[in-house]
Amino acid sequence: MKKTYLTPILSAVLLTATAITAPSCINDLDISSIDPQSSSSFDQQGTFVKQYALLGLTGQKGLAGTPDLDGQDEGESGFYRTVFNCNELPTDECVWVWQDNVDIPQFTSIAWNSSSQRTEWAYVRLGYNITQMNFFLDQIADKTDEESLRQRAEVRFLRALHYWYFLDLFGKAPFKEHFDNELPTEKNGQELYNYIAQELEASEDDLYEPGQAPFGRADKAANWLLHARLCLNAEVYTGTPDWENARAYANKVIQSGAYELCNDYRLMFMADNDQNPDAMKEIIFPIRQDGMKTRNYGGATYLICGTRTGGMPHMGTTNGWSCLVARKALIDKFFPEGNVPMIPENVQIPGQEEFADDEAIDAWDEQYGVRTIDLIAAAGDDRAMFYSGAGGGRRTLYPEAITGFQSGLSIVKWQNIRSDGAATSHTEYPDTDIPLLRLAEAYLTRAEASYRLNDTESAWQDICTLRNSRQCSVMPAPGEITEDYLIDEWAREFYLEGRRRSDLVRFRRFTSGTYLWDWKGGTREGKAVSEIYNRFPIPDTDLNNNPNLTQNEGY
Image (cartoon, rainbow, N blue to C red; front, side, top):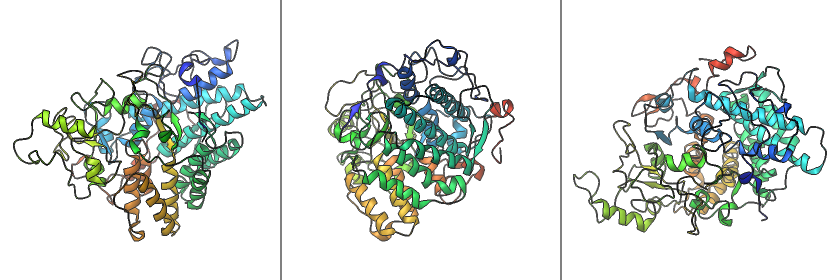
């Protein structure tokens, strides 16, 4: 498999030709204090790189100082962090423990409203990025050379990705294809679904062949996988399922042969996942991150620092934020009876008044890398990457209240450590790329679509193929492949990767009483919430500035 690198992505991200800043609402998607059309020259390569940089940066000076979005918290308003929060914080996978932070109680219990700041951050960021993409596409509209055609196809893919997030989170989008002063119109449901599908089809031919793109750029496999994701959720978006096409596009990704499942799960979430061939062979489309050149408070920094506190085993960063912990429901996916081994056999068991001293636990941690005991071995699954103590304080699996970082097991999936033991670029800001699209999604998409089409045998085969690559000690029988099994397997494979809410909505379990988890609806035991929360509200700021937009039902 050939892999080269998107070399400008790290060196030229700050040399953009379109330094647009934006107010707090995107109303007309024409948000600029410096109009890029007034520039005396157009740097095509620099502006092209900017389109990818938008996925992983928040401004022109790294951490803070010249933000993309005026009036927004730069650390909170990056692309990945905003969509991650919407898709993870309200779900059964994790909780943000500092409940006094803006909108966090509402996100924890699924109780936001149309003035939610976190909802607005996601909406504004998606709209801002689309504005940049529209500008670039307008500038190269008349070019027919091979490189321009390829760049156009890649940016159309990126724009389709952003419109997919609009569709998935909000059920509609303020729609524009050009950079001008016109107010956007509204596309929703079937109309937006059709547009995204058409854009993916139209851009496919000019993309790199699968596995041939520089690492960090989109190829045909990325296009097919996004199309498979769109079709997998067709019933949610349009009211009509499209399992056949979901399976067909996932099959195209798998059958291309350009990518393979990684046989060491942790490698895909380590600092050299852009260099380790075993990690790279599964990652189809990453968000590039570098501790020196792409510093920000979203992206990998958010994932690694947010899940760590002082005293924990080394995870490659000196900056522990003590913010994100696992909900009990996630741990139950690996330990169904809630029987989580918390400490070694030679140490007193949980429930007794006395625990081992930290030195004994730390010695065990060092032996097993990042876990209090070998939870991976106990779970029989390479994906069970959790930590229960003692560094940073003994964790509580099922706390009576969310009071701090001990209110749940720590998740140690994301690390700023290299698999080869070499030093990273920085000890605080990670080098770890974010695998936004990877091959496992194609296998699970094909498995679920096959199951929906009553082809249980094919679904079982794909599940077993995936679980074998994760060194799982237990394989399901064909008759054990059910909706419950599938939704749990999506969690086991993709927890803390920014997609869980979407899967729960598709299985009709996000708001209903069919499936409850800790703190859903604001109670420890969980309770059903209104169906209106299957979609986020359109921010009041945009409704007030654009008469073309309408609010989602119930808000």
